[in-house]
Amino acid sequence: MKEKFKEAFGKISKAKNILLVAHERPDGDAVASLCAMIDLFENYGKKYTAFCQGQPINHFSFLPHIEKIIFENIFKISGENKKLNFHDFDLIITLDCGSLERTGLAEEIEKRQAGQFVIEFDHHPMIKKYSDLEIRKSEAAATAEILYYFFKANKIKITKNIANCLLTGILTDSGNFLYPMTSEETMSIASEMLLHGAKFPQIVKNTVHNKSLAAMKLWGMALSGLKINKKYNFAFSVLTLDEVEKNGGNDDIFDSISGFLSNLYGVNGVLFLREIEDGRLKGSLRSAHSSADVSALAVALGGGGHKKASGFVLEGKLKRDGESWEII
Image (cartoon, rainbow, N blue to C red; front, side):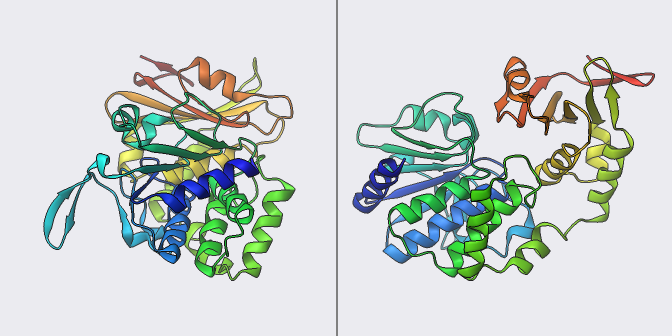
């Protein structure tokens, strides 16, 4: 891994124009990882563009450089519409994307020209290889944790900005150290970021103590609807599209609900299923059971992820049948 970190930094040093990409509808880890790399590039005077498809939720506005991220393929410069030209870049770096499809640039990356090099930083299990240099650590709690090792391997100074970003990514993707992926290394890195000047109270205020009334209602619905399938000792909760739309839910809220449900004692795992637009269902699978591997179920349903945290998307709608639910 250390050699990969050095190779990646070598490519960055020689690159003339870099495209940074995080996954669509970015969460805290994705946005924070982008901002950490932006800080690095700013300090090294690199020419870059940072992109992810779909706006992050407002409470990440405290992160440094977030205003430099482009959230649409078409954006404004000096009042004029400009289109992101993929062929302008000789180096593409994807961060926390999980799969090629979540980059929002799948076709462009697959059909890239000779001379366009792709580096992938990710802590999700590989679904399909697409990068020229894959830097993956599936046991890491967050992509931000992998970036920490990248900075250390290349003796890059961790600035206060980078420390804030890395700690934000780790906190949000570990559920404030509650999720099973949290390790001793995760805790050690977080502690070091505090020594580098990360503002823990500010991060917690913006990522934990920020629940709106609508968000709390969704939490209440998810908890009140929680049931256990006794045959498989598997808990589940369901939210309809109507419930979601009335309360303005977003991916960050649902991720936090899924993570919290994973703490349920005595079950093999938890499924949090909700309706999304276009007649589809999105499922989040979580488990704290020592021998459970929910990624196997996620893969069988067309998704993927970690052994203890996975997800999938299905075609269909929910129909209540007494105390049970059917997918139609």
